[in-house]
Image 1 (cartoon, helix red, strand yellow):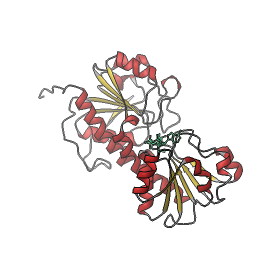
Image 2 (spheres, rainbow, N blue to C red):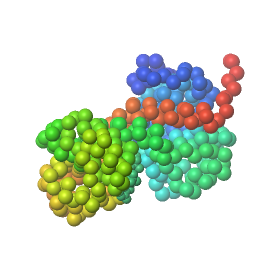
Image 3 (cartoon, rainbow, N blue to C red):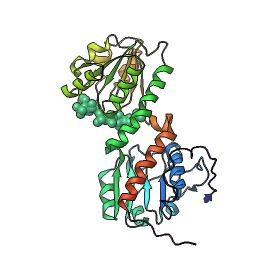
Image 4 (cartoon, rainbow, N blue to C red):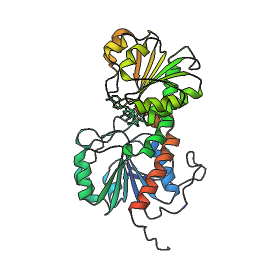
Length: 320
Ligand code: NAP
């Protein structure tokens, strides 16, 4: 069943950063699954004149968007498809905040799209990316883009603070916080903690990354010194997507440490060892969508719109 509601100027989530009222007129977008970011992304695209379809069980949170539980009417003739930032599951399963959504994007679905078209996702299984190219559909892996990762690092760091503060009895101010990894997320995490006057130590494998951390006002240590640094850390924020918080390292941690693991699943923590040792350690995936879907959806809209306009020819819209 398809449901269409009208776009209401006063609708929540539509304010701010309007991207050009009609530049997507005549464009059909299909947003598959995902979290609350998709609603805000959809709003922003609709405000730019696009026809936006949201495919999932639950109706869109805002008016102005078309809704379908079945993917076919939404994919049919779509110029742009946006899948979630979270990885595809087996058989092209698309991640959704609603566990009852059983959506998948298969190779045969690509035949329904307009040619050429653009397919956005956080990342792609190799087979799907190859099939998309063959079908005249440009796959764009958003997680590979520095721009997207840096923009996402802000709601991620704020979400990590929220999760840490909910679980502790002390301030971050004056506390010792470890940040593991000094890439796009680690840098924003450390700078956010510094702004709160936490005592920040960065653990990174590359000397240049440690030099940058020191230049930014942190202490910096190589990975080999992680276990020692854990002995007096009250907070640990991990961004390294490899097992670094091993059982041996965790044995050196304070009993009241709070570990927020931001790395993609399965994270960088031996959670079983943490549980056995009675430590608080949580894996915190998808924070931008959970903590700041409006901001994160707005960032997505900017990036998706720019790449779509660069990749595809304008649509000729005849005056009615
Ligand atoms: P990034 O810029 O590539 O940074 C990764 C950091 O981890 C770098 O410092 C890198 O060191 C280090 N690293 C990678 N593999 C390592 C290993 N085997 N041993 C030691 N250090 C290693 O990545 P990012 O954008 O910051 O993202 C970091 C992680 O957070 C990813 O898993 C990403 O999916 C996840 N993430 C999660 C959320 C969330 O909501 N939880 C949001 C955004 C991102 P080098 O520089 O030496 O390679």
